Amino acid sequence: MRHLPLFELSIHTPRLELRLPSLAQLDELGDRAAEGIHEEGFMPFLFPWSDVPPAERARRAIRYHFRQWGEWTPESWSAEFAVLLDGEVVGVQGVSAKDFGVTREVNTGSWIGRRFQGRGIGTEMRRAVLHFAFEGLGAEWAVTSAFEDNLASLGVTRKLGYLEDGIEIYNRQGKQVTMRRFRMSRADFTPATDIKIRGLDTCRSLFDPTTT
Image (cartoon, rainbow, N blue to C red; front, top):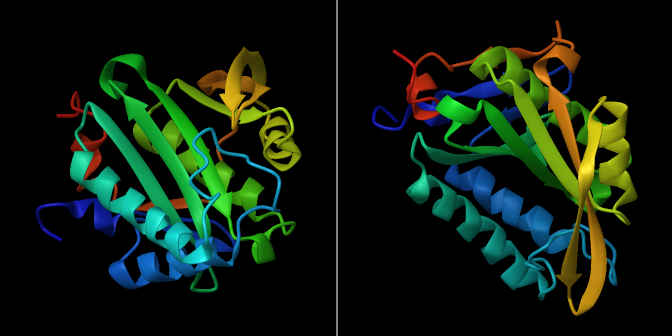
């Protein structure tokens, strides 16, 4: 797409490809959401978008991507990458920022279809966007957060070397819950030799308005 070259951007790890999804891949992503993301009675998201019947869960997942594309500006963006394993969509790895040209800080969030969990995919896809942020975009900070009962997400975060950055208290479906924040600096990040970024030069200015 000449006027929105974001769709030419991709990140490649030993097993995975991350890219903004095509319409067909969005449909497949809806399938993953409908199949299930987490067990019943557990809610990993601040906004409980997944706590609906499967068909509506699929539609919500798809609509979210259209909304992010439509609202994208260099000053406020959210790259919601579809994660592909052997060509099959398995989930989403997002990286977002506000005023990145000044703050040099990104935030990450993700989800994986339940039948693909427990295979190290979450760690590999987070590592991919950290490499993209630090080595590709020149970020100085990466932050993330998770509820204290989201053990899988906390495990990935700690494995990758983030430092704890405080807590926040939220109302999650009528109950008090603690959100744990984490932060990683560029100095604490180890570049990966097995991750490749393709197509960034043509769309770099859409992430960083200070790019010349």
